[in-house]
Amino acid sequence: MSESSYGFRPNRSAHDALRSASTYAQEGRSIVVDLDLEKFFDKVNHDVLMARLKRKISDKPTL
Image (tube, rainbow, N blue to C red):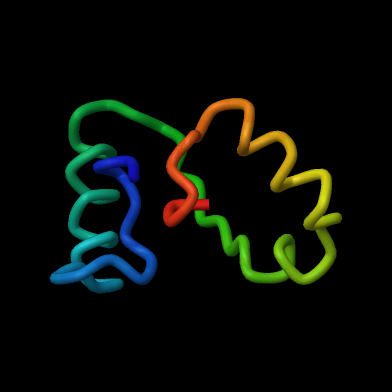
């Protein structure tokens, strides 16, 4: 997981995400992306997804 990820992460909240976004803005960054992947996984072809993941991940419990 990316250190910039906050959704469904232990010990991280929406408030933490907002604080990070504010810090990034103060550092001069001008783009913040808010992305909800939930619907993606409802529509993705799971057979194709798993086949592609298997190319990179050999650990079956992780898959």
